[in-house]
Image 1 (tube, rainbow, N blue to C red):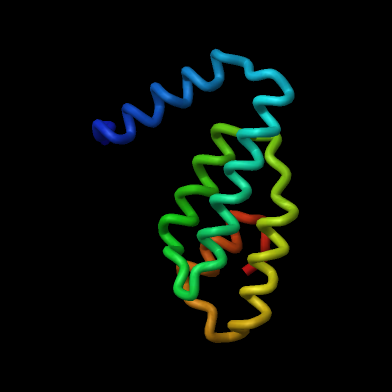
Image 2 (cartoon, helix red, strand yellow; image 1 turned 45 degrees about the vertical axis):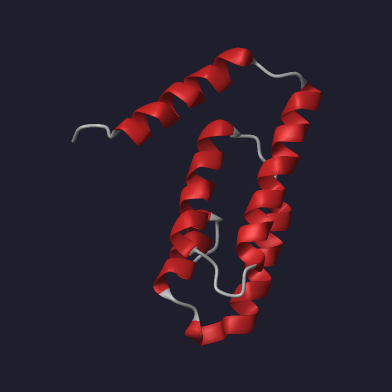
Length: 101
């Protein structure tokens, strides 16, 4: 399949980020912003699961050394709250975060 303009722009941005080789301070700042964004998505009363799954996948590309602990904990809380009523999209995101679903 052909790459969409949006996908091409993402790839170019990803290549740029990788080529910059940020300092530890810059990397920590990026990780903090990503963590805040992911936690914000999870805190919504009705999360955009497709958006969250996409953000998790992009984070894995941009920040392979990202510490998922806080995001995984928040996801665990959501799974415990929703129990068997957890939808397919939420389960997909949970699997991307390392949960066996």
